[in-house]
Every structure is written in C-alpha cells, then in structure tokens.
Image (cartoon, rainbow over all chains, first blue to last red; front, side):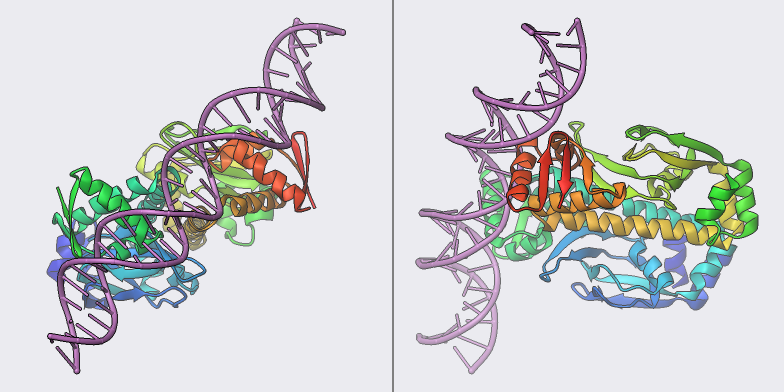
Length: 208
Length: 208
DNA sequence: TCACTCCTGTAACAAGGGTTACATAAATAC
DNA sequence: GTATTTATGTAACCCTTGTTACAGGAGTGA
C-alpha cells in the first residue's frame, strides 16, 4: 500500500503525512459497477482514489439520475469531505465506473491533518476547487449544449476513462446518465453513425 | 468596522482572528448593479460579504450568461478563494444585486490563518460546502425543471433577497439570468398573471 | 427447439421552448 | 409638443426533445 501511496501522492504529501496515512487508512478494492455511496446515506470515512474511475450522479425526485462528473486517480470526493465533518446525508450517488483501488481515511484525522500539514490543506483546497470546476463544466454542458453535443462529450469522456475506443454500454444506460430517454439516444447515435463518427454494435459502440 | 465584523462573524470566529481581520481588511461599499468580478479577471483579494446580495453568473461562449446562485451576508466567494491561491483567472461573473458592504482580505493571510485558526479553517470548508450545495441546486433547477418552474423559483428568490413583493426588473433582464429569450419569459409571466400568481406592471412585477 | 427478455430501429405525434415579426404603450430625449 | 427608445403583448412558425407504439434481431434459459 505504501508504494501505491507514494506513487500517486508522494509528490504532493510530505513524508510524515504519507506515513500517517499508511498507518490509519484502510485499503479497499471494488469491482466496476458497484455503489460506493447512495444518496441519503451517512458517511463515516473519506475516500482517496488510488486507481480507477468513479462516476458521481445527482438523483432527481423521481429516482432518475444525472451524471455530474468523474473522479480519477488522485482525486477525492469533495461532497464526502464536508458530509463527514458536518455529519449530513449524502446528496449524491457514487458508482464505480471501472474496478477501483481506494483508501478510506477515518473522519477524525481530517481536522488534525489540516492543522498539522500544509500539504494536506492544499490537497483539500485543490480538491474542492477541482470539483467546483467540474460542476461548472457540467452546468455548461447541460445549460449551453444540445443533446447531440452532450452525447458526443459523454462518449469522448468514456474513451478517456476506459482508455479504449470500444465502449461497452447500452443506449438505455447512456440515456440514464444524460437524464433523457432511450429513443432520443438511439436516434442521435444513428445520426452519428450515418455521419461516420461511430459504428454501432449490440451493447457496444466503436468510436472512429 | 469592528462592530460589523462582530455582528456577522463574532459567533464563529475567535477574538484574535476578528482582530487580525480588523487590522488587514479593507472595507468597501458598492452600489447595486456593479461588476465585482469579471470573467477572465485575475483576483488579488478575497471578499467577505457583510451586507447585501451578490449574484454569481456563468458566461457561455457567446457572452450570454446563466445565473448560478446568490451570495448573502456572511458568505464568501468560493471561486475566488482558490483563484486567489492558484492565481488562475475567474471562471465567473459577480454582480451586486443590492448595495453591498464587504471586506477585502489580502490573499497572503488565507494560508496563514488556515494554519493558525481552527475557526477559519471551518469557515473556509463550510463556504466550499455551501457553494457546492448551491451549485447542485442550480443543476437540479436547470436539468430537472421546465422554464415555468425555473421562472417561479427565480421570482421567489428575488422576493427573499429584496425582502419585498415588488420586484423591479424587466422581462429582458430575467431572460438574461435564465439564459433564454425575452419572448419566452413574457409568455410565461402572462400565464402566471392569468393564474393570479403575479400582477404585471411596466418594469416591475408584483407577487401575490 | 421454444419462450422470454433485452437491445436496437423507426414512425408518428405532442410539447416545450427558441425565433421572427409586428403592434402598442410608456418613458425619455429633444 | 414630436421623435425616439424601451418594455411589453402576441401570433406564427420551426426545431429539439420527449412519448408511445411496435417490429425484428440477439441472447438466454428451459
């Protein structure tokens, strides 16, 4: 675990902090497609993402959802941080997009490390900032783009996360993430195929 | 100034911090409708809002904007905080909604106070958390609500901020904040009037 | 093999919201 | 006063998106 820690955080955390993390953190490995945090759940520890990708979804009143952004290696969940501190319920839904490796930090350490380590304070601040920026991007996408542009961005994002031009996903799943209907997605994907941007197969999409 | 400080922050900041703020902060009073931060601008000091209301807007590529949320007394601008630290350009546009009183804190003090004062750390964390929550609310509104609901929420928000049922605003200004067209707003407002929710006048709206 | 479920394609239609155009009335400038 | 600008009301139209319905193909299980 200490190697993983050094690999992803060694450059930004001082040695003493790395050692403290190593002592108190719990290592976890989770398969793709698992729930990490459900909306309404109370949160008891804070995750540091070592490897893989997590998608953060916002539920509406009817139980449908909207994809907000992805967490990648080296990220942490800003929502979780204050939910931890304030013992409020989670406002979001976190699902593993790939298999992930993560460290769980006990809540109590957060304040202590904020006092002791400048690098930890910077890390927390940067995390908040990055999350705010991703929320802004998300708002841009929803408010300023049509569904065809949103779909295109979505697919490009998938390529980056999965590091492959073959995306194994159904139209229905895409529709759920973009908070629209399956028919709309099928229609737009067909248009992209006619436009030679992609090739459609059963349950997977090939980016060209 | 020290009275204002104590009034709004006395309960959450320790005395020594209040005194430090009093020593280094610059007091400012700004009229309604003024630009505080323009998109792309570099930010050199961090605002603490003592009184009044500030609206935070997100620009699109064409120069149109979308209202994200309001800052009220006791708030600070989370965007600004990290823009200060990271010396990045502002991603947002801040405009005074009413006349405001604010304190400008030199950037350099932020890190120092984060080290020294637990209450300051909590304040900064809470600010980030509140801003994330307001962004979420904003996303809910844009993604899950139709324009008529968004308009209704907008008007209710105005009532709260202005503390009056008489809203002095034109349809064009509302359209700009909601990133839609004047005709759409006029149409929906007329529907609300027929529905006895509001009464329309030239350049102002009466909530019933 | 047969039944069933899941995934995709497509048509037809409805609704929301954006656009253009024009008319009228109130405010302002001269 | 008149001319001009600004705010509003409204009609007609179109495009995007959402909805319903149905068909056929692919996979799965008995």
